[in-house]
Length: 242
Image (cartoon, rainbow, N blue to C red; front, side):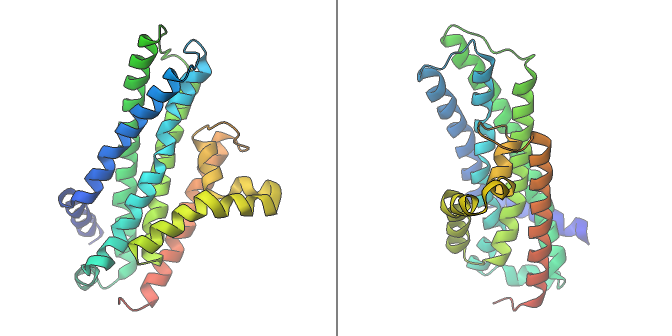
């Protein structure tokens, strides 16, 4: 039955236009970000510049957060969630299927962005008179971390969409946390702020100023996905659909 649920989610993903618009926006923003970095005077001969260019992959996780939110909250908005739950009354299985399919989509999106970042960086560096060093380990670590960050934030988005069933409310809450609340909470709790979701993502994506190691950031992100998933499954199973 889980396989059927996952196939259904995949079919929904294929036929709904909104996710594809988000998918299309990501590579465009990566190209724009890398072009801005190089034209802004970055030293293309400095290996750190390649990592900064690759870091744009992780920042696109904000798009995937919204993408994940819409996976569940969007169904509530269009009232198709009732049909989904009628086909599988065990709602927790529905949420798990959505998490699996959409997190997988987050991995694919991250890989696409990584490829885009490599091509865009190679072209931009060449135009600026330099070259992209593909043997640079930090470059590949940054890209890999960005992929994990995208997948994790997609899963967190699915859970948030299940908990806050209004798309606008869920997206506003998630983005407000990242833009405002996490910074304030981080100041209040000091060093513990580095363990918060976005800060962990920054560590996974090797963004400058991260206070955790990359591996630790990845593990913390995956723990957040698991925690949000457990809460989302528990709450969804107990409350009324409407």
